[in-house]
Image (cartoon, rainbow, N blue to C red; front, side, top):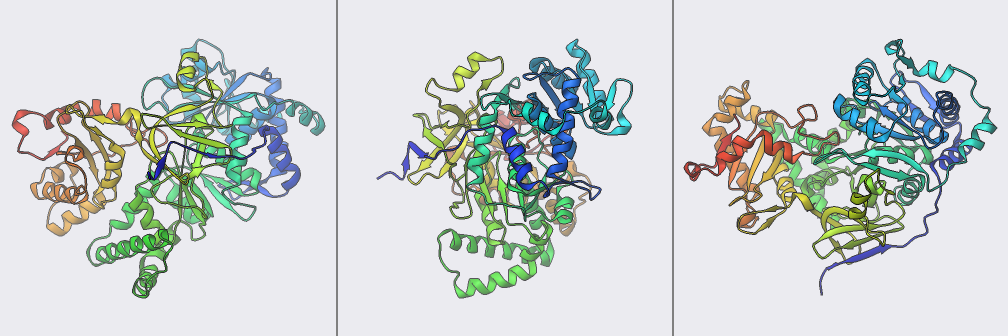
Length: 608
């Protein structure tokens, strides 16, 4: 009997509704509970949030925005982002979040495509970018800037925007806000565009509300919990989770990916949501130790994985492993937990696949990472592991009210109340993505266990077909390599080629430590990667991870790259996903060198 099935449903009655109803109901129920904290150690209760939102909704009306209009938010995470968002929702204005890292030309496209009638920005930098983008649209669009000192003749400050006239009384505000209907457009989220032109995902109030309520049944949280909101709020996952924290009574502080390590220690969150890149970087930082400390950490990592295996199997730790675990905890794991604040109940991981061995390392060290799955088009969560039902290597069972189907070609299809209304202004693309009977084509390939746990194999469009006709799933190989302490980032290539190859950004802290011990100069990355002994080391380290791969999927060539893949250099999306097309274009010369006739005997190459 096969262990996999093609269909699984978590049938449940998820009540419909609006985000406005959730907001007002929470304020009435938990008005005195702190909702948001600020860097200045200030705090806003839910009732204070409601007062600001009432003024914000009134200010939007005074600015000429009517129910059904759209307003953009171009800012990194901060409390004003949330206040502007709630204000738009209560005013019936669909907001359009824009990643603050996008250049002006892309901002202009989103402003033009969405028809935004107002733009909220954070500071002078984003104000100037918005102005440049607005000029490209050929329209006049008012700007509201959160930082008071960035206000000028053409941009009103947030405080003045709120204070610029009389706001409706509480009763009138609630009456107007409650005109929202479940089927109304709540937000227009533009995909991050790893390929092609961004598309505007239309999410209704009911899409997001149903997802909040379904997820709330699985992930318990209350007023004793706190979180750090550091994934961009333009990302559907962080946005929905922040709503979830709000209605559950938890408090939220805002931060950024750049400051997350410091913020976790300072704010000591109990729940944190991230993409795998954070866990990969923490894992690499732990394993970067060298000398005696490095040997201790390597031993502790082995103990962690053996511990995790026992817990996965529901088995008690053997006495010897229990003793080793206690020693490793005192010397290594307790410091790791302190580094993430010391109060964490669990992490949630989404946005991309997390290497199972990295997850096992954290689990064995006493840190639980609940991997989940979803897309902007599904509001976003479709699946998640829970503390009670937890299986590493999967993204969990479908959330209540959700059906999963595996198509004949392995593509994952989703049906449920969280499936988007469609792509804004793109009826043909909508029809190609959502079937007549309501199934959303995710573009991901996966397998479904008989008891409903979903495993993501890869992105359908990322599957590599070699010239020999073999299909290779690159993400699984990349995750295999990234658990090696000498590997930071990896991208497998080989579409239409005779064999696969891999581009690797080494974990330079670890590599430079090795170089110092070996007597090499670690100060010049390029020169270090060009050294033959360094290349032998990295070749052997990678070969050790690839021993169980089939011949056709084993990368035959290794390209070493000295620059990190980042959002700033255009290789990562704002949600830390690799833009494979950009990698292929930027490193075209390196990739071509793998397949030259004079390179047959050579394994390791270095980007010029």
